[in-house]
Amino acid sequence: MTDAKIQRTASGYIPLLYVAFYLSFFVITCTPVVANGQLLQNSPPPKIATFHENKGITKAMEAGDVTSLGLILKSDLPPFTRIYARAAYYRTLFDLKRSSLYARRCLNGRLGNSVMDDDPAIITLCGELLAGNYSIQGDVRDWAAAALETRRKVTPVVEKLLGPVKFEIAGLGNTDFDKFTNFPGSYAASSQHEVILERVTPPDFFTKRIVNSNHKVDHYADARIPYIVKININGSEKDVVLDSGSSMSLFRVAVAQRLGIVINPTPYIQNIDVVTSNPRSPAQEAKSENEAHLGLIKKMTLEGMGKVIHLENVPVAVGGHVDILGMNVLTKMDSILLTERHLVLNVANRPNSCDEPLRIASKSMGAYLLVLRYHIDGVMRNVMLDTGDNSYLSGTGSAHVSAVAKDYTATTIYDLAGLDKTRYFKQGTTFGVGKLARHLKIRVYPDEHVTYGYVLGASALRDFNVYINFKRRVACLEPLAKTL
Image (cartoon, rainbow, N blue to C red):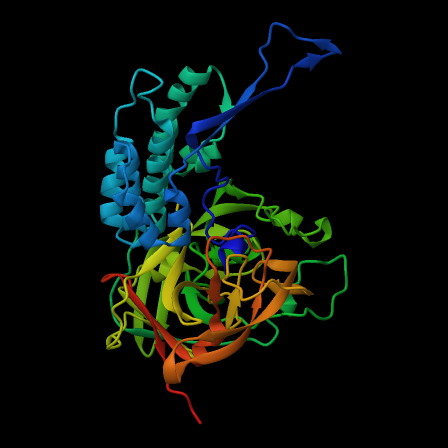
């Protein structure tokens, strides 16, 4: 699922709100308090302040742009900002240990006594990034603890600068972090055996999950066949969508209850159907599922070819309308190999040519996507891997288009995010170089305003295998020989 889709689901969007926080700019709005038609002069109007960071660090991290982060680090930066840039740089290279060292150093920095010395913006972002690193590692307890620590440290400084104020500190708008500090800590796979999961595809997977009950819809223009594997949860077998575009695994409420998944009563994600530039109509929103809870799977088993991997205390999101196996499980493996028919966990034989650094595009609080490098129209570009999308290759509003489109085609997509009315235009694109180049007519969705330009879906697996080594932090697309 793409990052735009992450905004509409509980797949991995741990931050409830992401409001960029810059010290150099703030806006205060005041609203008078009225009771019984009379203005209450003894109650000061509430203030709302918004801050922003203006060096491009956060934007580059969200795009998985290691090159831009490297250039930023070569520029003249204030001390705290440089530390934050280093934390973002190593996060993007999936070196979470070094990233956390820098983020912690920044968060531990002393806030000064004057306005010029105070830097709550960068320290807040460092705290978020530290919390996000814990989130990527599946450690809910320390994610919540780092978020609480950051908010408690920064709040009095902001109030000192502006007086009593209501403000959004980036992803720290969630007021219930203290409800998650009792979760088990980080979990790990029981063994590193090579396990092969076979792909299965029930033909009625989507038709059984139509959420729009008020309108009879017999056909969707782009109903896509997902990549499904079988796993075992608390002793029961379950079909789940393998979704590399989801940083958190996700289960429907009824399924979670049936499988014995422990559900935290406090919602940690609200408004799953976030209003975007191309919003869904009210009739298309799954209104009863606009909140997701954090759940805990006591025992998860991944089994194939007579070998088994066990995981315990796996955090998952509970909500939405599709059951998803996300990256928080896959990253517990040393490596994975994704083919058209199999998911191989802890790969025994590494492809010979795979030496590209693993990159991720991530939000500060932990939602992230895998980034692969490949030639598009003769230029090496970042491509997001999204097995929750069964297209081959598609473009977003950030794609490098050859010409401005004059005509658009409207379409209704029913995918993992549900119903979505959107538009696209087609563009000829060459994917790869030389004898292995694929000449494609891809769809470009101009209203998907995200930081990356291209999305590689599950259909591309007929021409490529994908190898990712989380331990060595390398990844690559392995082209398959063309058949004549």
